Length: 206
Ligand code: ADP
Ligand code: C5P
Image (cartoon, rainbow, N blue to C red):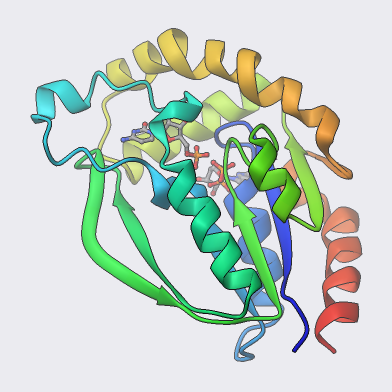
């Protein structure tokens, strides 16, 4: 059995990681070959905290994630085994009750803020991608998305951006760009870069 290939996609919040992963996934729709795994699903369980406490968590620090569980899962997937993956509820700031079974595929796309920052993840990825989108564009996209999809207010998005998102991006995410094999400017509108990745994935799965 061939070991699955793991493509890691990192980049700042709202840089376009999810959109790129989804575009790649859509090109193989209907085939049991590719699966997206979101680092966001590995945010630590916060059931023991009240909502007032949960909103105070720094969600842009690597320690907010259960990296040990993710590494354990990546190793199982590499061995062709299935995993029971947690899922995340942004409105509750907590893991949801839904657990997803992820079984063996040819290609896994792992996308999230710290995919390049965490050495153990880098070691397990075959291709490392960084989505490089300017901070002002990312802020506008994030504002829209968090108001429409994540149940946030204008005030909370702005405060969170200035207190944690921006400084943590500068401390952890941006410096991890140096580990990328491929840097994609402007995210999913970069059709040339998407096509190059598609060619590579096709050569693995066909
Ligand atoms: P990330 O996964 O890096 O946080 P997403 O792919 O979820 O980023 O994109 C964040 C928001 O920006 C989403 O609402 C998405 O629809 C929007 N978006 C992503 N890429 C583009 C683009 N190229 N042009 C315009 N909007 C985009
Ligand atoms: O999809 P994206 O990469 O933007 O997701 C990560 C972002 O989600 C982080 O920048 C973090 O601030 C945000 N987040 C949040 N509330 C949570 C968990 C994460 O705003 N409960």
